[in-house]
Length: 208
Image 1: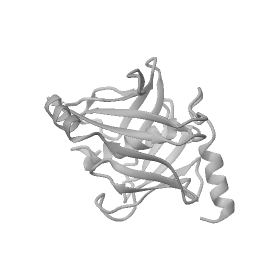
Image 2: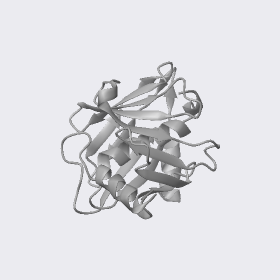
Image 3: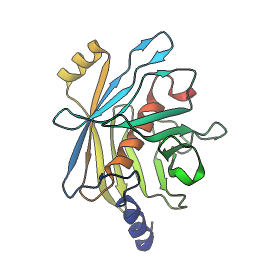
Image 4: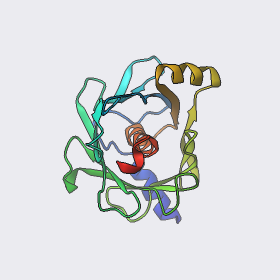
């Protein structure tokens, strides 16, 4: 990615793609609590919290037959984004839309995992229909430990919680990890992309 392209990518990340205020002048952390338990054909939703424990975003319980679409809600329960897997995509391309619409005018991002398996892939994210990726994601996806980079700069990273947390989370049917975002970046975009990666890695992810 050349200097001009890198600058354009960072400019895209600094915008507010979902309205409200999701770009902060300080580092921001989110906790992902993924309720991986199943009840019949229902997959439990994911809650994304601030460090103080308040809900920032959440997905609701979903019927497993509705695998290609998931709505994300904000702190007050309003739909903020829709995660959508393109059914005719050869390489598992996902899209993020503003609100509940799947109209092209509401498209925020295309997420393209690449040509290899999740064990070794690089995920590229394109904003607003751009032909150049705004950022690239690499790392241990299965371990929920990966980095978001743009123009050679790390803009965010995920990390699974410690062993003690992992045991308690397993017993309660929850998988917990954090997302740390650097200042000046649209946190909502990175949260939505992280939710997509979590969906890809879910037990039904390859079918979603």
